[in-house]
Amino acid sequence: PDSITSVILQMPPAEDLIFGTHGGGIGETCAMIIILAGLYLIHRNYIRSYLPGMFMLAAAVTAAIAPVRTGEGLSWQWWPLTAEGLEVGVTYVAYHLTCGELLLAGWLLATEMTSRPVTASAQAIFGILCGAAAMLMRLYLDFPIPAYAAVLLGNTFTPLLDASVRPRALKRTPHEFYEKI
Image (cartoon, rainbow, N blue to C red; front, side, top):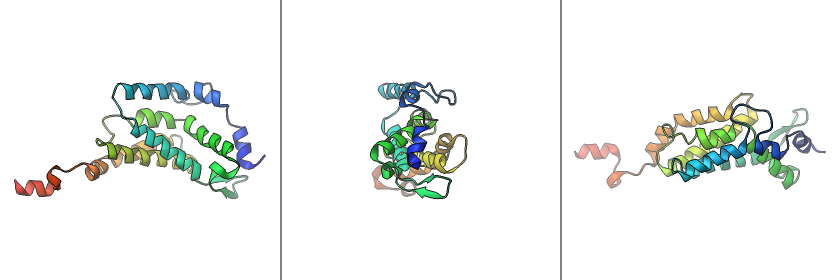
């Protein structure tokens, strides 16, 4: 088998990832429970679906197109989604989405109400920023908790995102509004 295929053959089965019977940190292993908890929060209107959706979409796109080091680390494989067939690529991306802290960070940590952006468009941008940063950190840094660090990084941009996409009253900036008073 090719290099990416040999890596996929070493991955745990999909059932283990979904039901949480593989090794991992506490609360990170059972993908089904994390997704059900997130759907419950959406149903109860505590969170909106586009923030975790954009987080997961950005992470999936980043995993699909970011180059992967293959073999003995001497070569890079671009576009892992289509490198060795679509089935292998989809398995590779699904593994990254269901294994580790990415689901927990995307569904529960990034949607935490006190540090996420307020407006819908700012939340979507926040989700994209955190999802892409989490996957890039996961692929290229030897860092124990990349998704949590990506959410913390995104939280530093929350005031900037809120200020840049918040609708302005009477089409004026806050500075112009206070000058008129």
